[in-house]
Amino acid sequence: MELSSPSRRITQEPLSPRSSTAKTAAWSLRAHGHGAKNRWRGFQPWPGAFTALDGKKLIVHRMEVADAPGAQESAWLDLLPLKLPPAESASILPGQIRIQDHRLLVACAGNTWLELVEVQLEGKKRLAAAEFLRGITLPANAWLG
Image 1 (cartoon, rainbow, N blue to C red):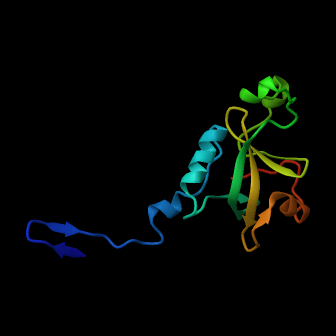
Image 2: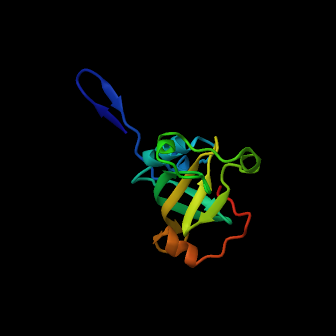
Image 3: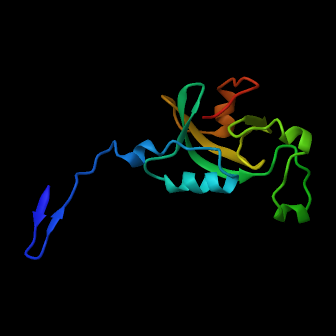
């Protein structure tokens, strides 16, 4: 569509719901936890960030950067990024899921973790992570992506 003005011609392309922005909303966990969360925030509220769980689309509505599962709590360590012990961290890869105290945790790069607080599986309603975990059985080696 071309718009004419006395001084110049402006070309304007119609917007499509299938634009490249909608295609790139597939969310990657290969970044550090804070980087992955910031990318997720960039797609809120539209087009929404999603990933895959057992071949189905999983939309993440709320998330937080979390401490490593099993990390020891200490007042002064709260300011530092917590790391997993070397033996355990070698076996953790981005996208791996851990369930701890009714929390849905996902590994990211650099031994960082994200807590998925509110999710929606394809064809299902939006649920808090604890409710989601009550209604689904995840295998021990479940992955996102």
